[in-house]
Length: 512
Image (cartoon, rainbow, N blue to C red; front, top):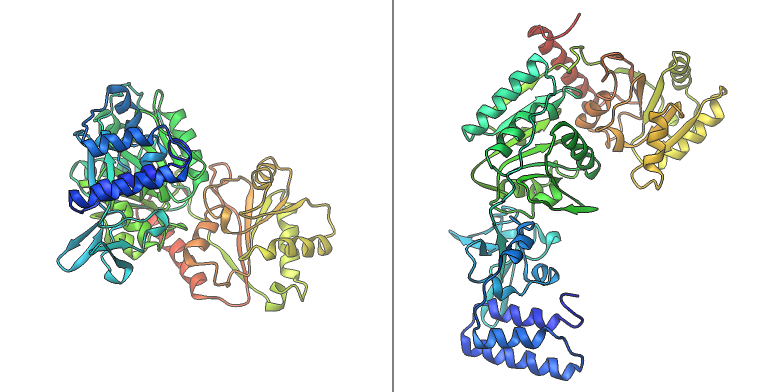
């Protein structure tokens, strides 16, 4: 509960305190809440004190220790409930210059506007009457809590006091990475949005190192947002290693680590909770689920920026919509090691193979070839149910002593199985699209089983293909699309990979 048990009465007091009704009506409601509290029987040590403060109009100010505590919630749009869970007496915030009270839904020229997710579609707002007041709330971002035109949200914006020096990273960039880094930094100073469209394995993260360093040393608030929490964890480790002395706020579903710093790494689901706060937002993997195609998350990212704030997108497969958001697109068609992207091959097979009603000599031959070359094989399947079925199928049809395993999103031993594959304890790992990005294995070939399935989009097929040849010492490898139909997604994925290779050759970026 909020302060002590049965604190719903305290929340009720504050809801009346901040609602738009006359003072006499408020006083009547206060008395009703007090009487209900007395009838309830159980006592709350904070209730009476807060009640007396509110009714008498007592004015309080926050001391330095309170401000220091609140600082870690900078930028967030906090509800009354949120603040009570933090054990904050909300009327203490009323006369502080660092705390703003904002209505979440505004009426703009006959259209409603949600400050959190940017929704302007009147069909996605719901309204009802309360005390002759029309209350309107946003349905599009309701999963993040109700936000309306009636009760305010509180935004804390206390200046950071951390003046700790950080060391400039010594990461060595390729010529094309360095040029891209300079353009991104220059654009940010001109308030221009940038898309870095880079092939898988190009080293996108290193390209924004200079921007992060410049922002922190210039006391700007900067955030890197990624759809997946496992990548948040990975980036935290990378920045902590490469930036000596850096402090990082880390936020995802399993962790909320706040420090006195202007640098944040978080999932895109956390980013939508911020409003008018960041000077720069870098969004990595903008093509990935659940960010891609979710208007709530996409437009919420825009709402997290201050006026004239800057967006930087990083992607190997950006959508037309993302391209339309930016002022400049930087294309990096070559990997950091300078070798071209391996191009997938296509083999057609009967649909009965994918229903496990027929043996596949193509599949068997390919697996044996990979194993003979002492390489590992990652097999992608379109649905979880196929993982175990394919393992059983391979166990029955591959006679050699081969270690086969499978992994999927809800697998309780997910990390352990992936680590075994890293350690060469597994020869073949069957997986869903959970491993289409964010992992790097050497001496790896890839097979996409039932590549024509609707779950394999153009973007996912490009990402899957990008798992091969990521290391300088192993810059090539095989990618096989096994399918009963050469779909539009397959054709487009191969076309885009070939386009990037041709662009790299045209610009003379590739090694022979």
